[in-house]
Image (cartoon, rainbow, N blue to C red):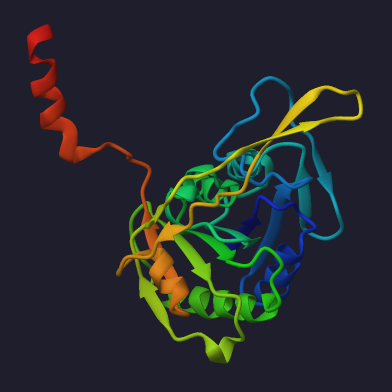
Length: 250
């Protein structure tokens, strides 16, 4: 198998190093192609206004001066002599749960690989400063070994969030749906050294709804959360309602 690793934290991140360490002996060919610097929160952005450059960092490690989606697009679009069989994006330091997946570069990189031979995986350790990355990486290896022997068909992305716990303390695996964040992101006003107003988009202070069956609930209870994602964001339940609403304009 030809496995592509990418992420949004950058090619030299701690999460990527932990993932490479466990995966390099699990496949016939392993390539890292990831952003040259941290790109958290860029979602599925593509760089269309300037050319991309690729730098090599030792054996089979490449960085791109672009977004996570750029990296996978370059890797599967002809940069290498063959197309990867699968993309794993991660290990992200920080959760990608609920509707926050819309902002995630980690998830976006995996989405770019959803049409390859095997389903793409987006991997996150839920802690921003994880203490158990090696354990997380071992869990990823366990999951990968299972998926390789028991392939899942279809253009699927599996969004996988793992508690920052020792492997022995993980309670198991839950297949979940996306939960919901209570979106409260205050705009923090500051004055820069030039006495100009500037603003930080604050962290979400609203918490989340950990209803049963959600990814938030699984993590809160000490389980690995696996959520199958698709690209179609059509609100099917509202199709007929919108048709009826627009009837007077026809």
